[in-house]
Amino acid sequence: MKKITVLGSTGSIGTQTLDVVSMHPDQFAVEALAGGSNIKLLAEQAHFYQPKKVSVGTKQLAEEIRPLLPSGMELHWGNEGLVELAANTEADMVVTAVMGSVGLHSTLAAIEAGKQIGLANKETLVTAGHLVTERARAKGVPLLPIDSEHSAIFQCLNGERMKDVAHITLTASGGSFRDLTREQLRTVTVEDALKHPNWSMGAKITIDSATMVNKGLEVIEAHWLFGLDYEQIHVLLHPESIIHSYVEFQDTSIVAQLGNPDMRVPIQYALTYPERMKSPAKPLSLAEVGKLHFKEMDFNRFPCLRLACECGKMGGTAPTAFNAANEIAVARFLRGEIPFLHIESIIERVLERHVNVANPDLSEIEACDRETRSIAAGL
Image (cartoon, rainbow, N blue to C red):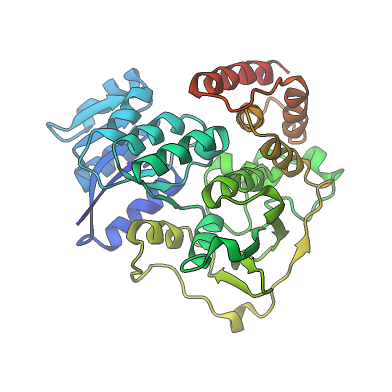
């Protein structure tokens, strides 16, 4: 039986991870659960899955959830709680499903403890890809991607030689506003932005999908996961989200991974790798789908993707600044403080001020993150 710790258990990826665990109760046991502020759901999860340890976002939330937990269950909070659950349990695998750069320290702690990583936190590789991949190699820890696009590439590369790869293509649905013009984007609302046409995701990642920031983060993540140059990483609009991504080899052969949009499939593959097990997802019928559509990416329509790729190529602290600026801008949009198009303008203005630091250590990454957030909050 594989022991699992889930960081971010109350979010979209976390709850779907636990769905997979429930589908295979003879295969998995939950060792620890970390949530943020949804203490009602976290308490329900704690009673159902009986983890040894639980963590919440703050000390105040810990006091609120304490009487709701089963007797004797160990309780932690804050970033220290995430690190505790990531490193100091008997878990074989840690699923990092927390949102934002807060996932970096806990992922590094899990790697140092020799835990297998189910990686659903993009920001970990975006902000510190060089540090994370270096430590994972040194410790012999596999980074198993949970994002549907990276899982697709990972599956397509099974048994292949990297020297035979010409390039990879990450597909993008286009998000909530893929059919709108730039002019129409000026008046869209938060409610409009949260209606993703294909996927069931959390609020932040759904907004990132609409701005195409999410795809930009995935490009940077793919660079680190698969050791590819940025020129080898392409993006293609594919509204149906049936082809999750594909690899083209030197001989022009293309290997793609297809399926209905259901995050439980890549989650389960990461949990069971290298085995495959029965999934709760609906099987794909290409006859029912009938047609698939594709369109070249328009970097003028989606400037955030262009900015992300530029930051990835620059390296250093540029991706950290991009990510931090976006996190603040998206939070401000969700609170109704700024219109939708100001997300990209805040990112661009932050990057204009950014002084890049090459090959940063962890303290320099954290300093960049703090400074960038302060600037983005004041624009």
